[in-house]
Image 1 (cartoon, rainbow, N blue to C red):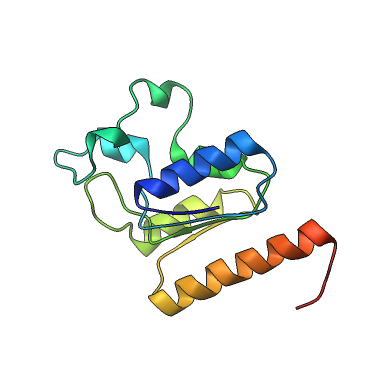
Image 2 (cartoon, rainbow, N blue to C red; image 1 turned 30 degrees about the vertical axis):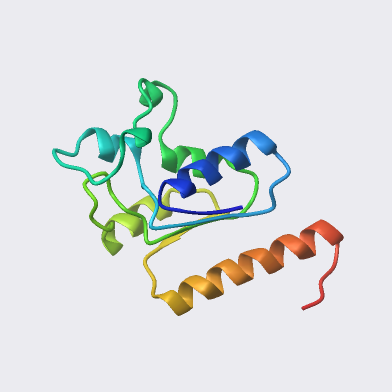
Length: 130
C-alpha cells in the first residue's frame, strides 16, 4: 500500500486495519499528529485533524505497530517543513526493525518502493526469485 501526502496517513491506517498488507510506503506524508497539533501555521487541510487521536497513538507509533515493512520517505512535520536527518535518525534508532524513515531524492525513493514491492511478492508466494 502506498500513499502521498495525507494519502500516506490513509495507507498506514489501511494497513493496520487490513492485516494482510505486505508493505507500506509513504512519501511527503504528515509525520506526526503531535507535530501538527503544535504547529502555529500548517499547510495541511482540516481533514488531517483527528480530534483526540493523541490519547491513543501518533503516526510513528502506528507505523511501528505494523507487522509488515514500512518506508516513510521525506516525512513532513505539521508546520510543512521536511524533517531533518538528525530527527529521523533519532526516531529510527528506537523504531522497530521493519520501519525505515529517510529523506531521499526521486531515484532513491523509486528504489525503496520497488524493493519493498519485491520483498512483499517474495513473501506472498514463498519465492526467493528476482
